[in-house]
Image (cartoon, rainbow, N blue to C red):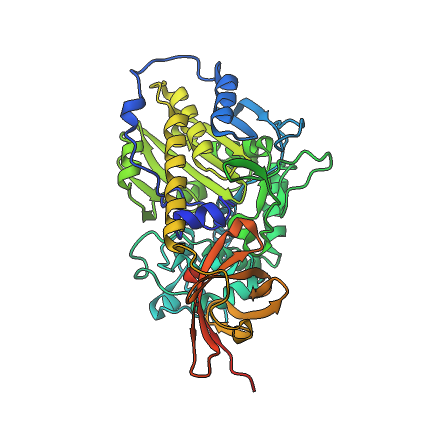
Length: 517
């Protein structure tokens, strides 16, 4: 899970978010300048060399690729290393976190239960969930599983703050949804939401009488024989696991995998390329694999029918000049490309990124897994493979997406620098004891500031911690202990007694002091 949060801002995506392909903000490079005339060649003859070239260009440690055509796995291989500086090689059995690709599994089990009459896609959630409340009264009354699966709740993406590093379990994350602002009118537009998918997964779990993880295992992983897949931090008896990596000071560096239990229905799965080749076969065979019907062809049609218009932003229109629309079904992006319907999605979580893409009419599908956070890499490989299959135009997908990624990172750094401003002091503007105390935010709950030998420590919720250091006259800099979360600026105000009465932490919101008894 692109990360790792889905789609609040490009910076947030890169640091802590899951990835939403429709909402990213790359540059406006004109892909036509990097294309050559159409030519037909063997689709996969040069793929090993091309994969290695991509890894070298992106300075990425590893990649695994699966390609399926007409129910046959026609390419299945790994490239590079599981961990930078380690000789252990990526192969087709190496486990990677698949982040938002988990949503295709969640949507599928919801659909199966709906077909069995255990769930109703269009029934208001409030009918089956006691005390369910959102800030918007219309959404509270009408929100359904169809709205959730097609990302049209209108909920603000600050909902992602509820799960990232807080230590809140799923129950607490969902309870706090009532405090999330409404960013757009209900059902008015595409509003990507990870936490809404958590709600869908928990609704499915309740209807089935199983935990969500058990439900996915029993209804999908075991019947499809995806024996190298599971929930949580990737594991393997033989240690064949890809390590996540990030870029720090322009150096690719291994990092610890993020625990995603509290957002498992949105981003909690891991898998190998071998297992994803089987998942591709299920989709390309209308819900079947090896004569076993996993789910109905009607469910395939429902999940790949446009439910919400996403639209092609200017950068996407430049990247895909042959495309006319981008929509969302249930768990999948739907896009026309060179006369084909492409059913695809991308996942990104701290240190991992991946892509699945299907051409259903051609019974062609690809899966690309990488252990770097840049979703442009697996997307570039996926569309390179699609072009190779259709008839290559010679378009340099990797070069285009790499330039976009570098430009995006440069903009993110410039935005961080501008937001922080110049440090003007190295001493606290007021005595540190005036900061110490308990604070509350409606969204995130309790924040506690304590004094330590290193200055001031801050804990938000159960486990989101960091150090506050002096920065400007009324601002402190918060450096999170989780390096992937980066830093934030804390603007404080005082009351007439000189105590800090409130702390504004950017997108994390304002925390107000709780008076002592």
